[in-house]
Amino acid sequence: MRIDILTVLPEMLESPLGCSIIKRARDKGLVDIQVHNLRSFTTNKHRKVDDYPFGGEAGMVMQIEPVDRAISHLKSQRKYDEVIFTSPDGERFDQPMANSLSLLENIIILCGHYKGVDYRIREHLITKEISIGDYVLTGGEMPAIAITDAIVRLIPGAIGDEQSALSDSFQDNLLAPPVYSRPAVYNGWEVPAILLSGHQARIDEWRHEQALERTRRLRPDLLDD
Image 1 (cartoon, rainbow, N blue to C red):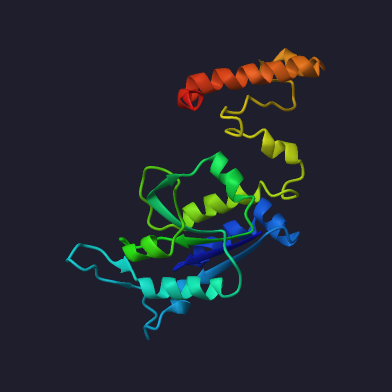
Image 2 (image 1 turned 90 degrees about the vertical axis):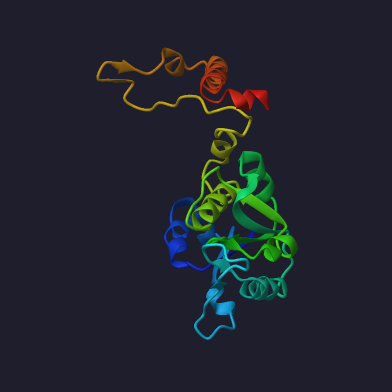
């Protein structure tokens, strides 16, 4: 899989994309992640990629030319399944979407910035808009990291125990059950006896019941879905 990220702040992405599961997946050759500085695609001698909006509104707008040049450059090299724009008014990102995106071969993620992007980018160059929540961030770099991380960890071989990803919260529209580790008793607080019983069928049943209880209590909307 290949993920190309377009940004005006590539330095924001360097550390998160070079750690943990993402780093291991890159080192194994399971995913190729390339970060591109949009300023490299502008014709402005000062490398500006933003300008004032028509109509006099406050704030600056990301211009269409460098974005179009960047996307056209990438598309000249390979076919992309999706060109994603991180936007607070996009489709809400969730685990089923992460599952779907992880099956694709090549994607581009455009990180929004400033007051917004020239709307013609969204009308003509973008195939999918994604939001990670109902709030506004300074830019789309952190959403791009969240999307990339959620996708990469699902690629076969990215994590040591692939069953671990399949049992994560939201994979079956349920929150994950409680988990415990050694010691069995700490400060008088005990691990549930069922987990020490060795009866796997009963343990699985307990875990499912706990997942249902936690979901009903904390996220009943998931059960409605």
